[in-house]
Length: 290
Image (cartoon, rainbow, N blue to C red; front, side, top):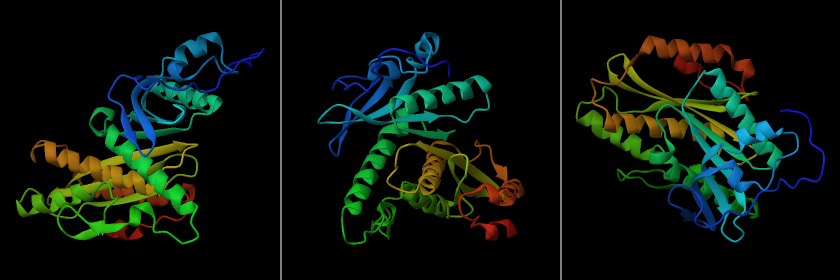
């Protein structure tokens, strides 16, 4: 990242004005969520370790959402939504953002998805994380063992009982309706999730649109110094289901790029073969036998 700087530099996070950002402000659970803040707007000065050139580039980094305490305006964590990319330039920019966020003490949550975007999905997803974090903080201060936020049971949109804090619950209900309408071969949205020892949490979800032909979504979640309030891998799978539901709602059945079942099974088997790189064991051996 460059040579260390000398001198007295205060690179602490600045309080964010109520009207800052480039979109509507969401107030949730004593926290204020700003859309579209540049890193240079929330940091007073160039952090130690960055050259002037590096800081000039990094300060223009745009965070999709920044969650601040209402009482102080101080940023608590930032959120990025990014499409999957193998571009070396994009990856270098991500690494710079990670390093600068760490240098200034700003926790960062990055969601990588081909379908989920900050404009259409960001407020809902960030509000969910804010609620989950608040619930987890309250549970941690209680002597009574609490049900996890994701495991709270209530009435679902289709009238059944189930996990009300499953971000994919609506998509699952709509998949049943699509099956009844003969737009899907199978009413169940299936999936898996894993966490890489040296990488992000990853969630997959798929729907059988035609016999042997699947619509597949994959989402990764990387939490740098921030708790999601729920297990990141489970969050990644729920987000994949959310993304899958979005595609099922907005795309004609004949249009989407469908994946042959054999191709998905081969991908799952490759995931199984890398089980030594995962946190915990690979719990989806049964899927490899289909």
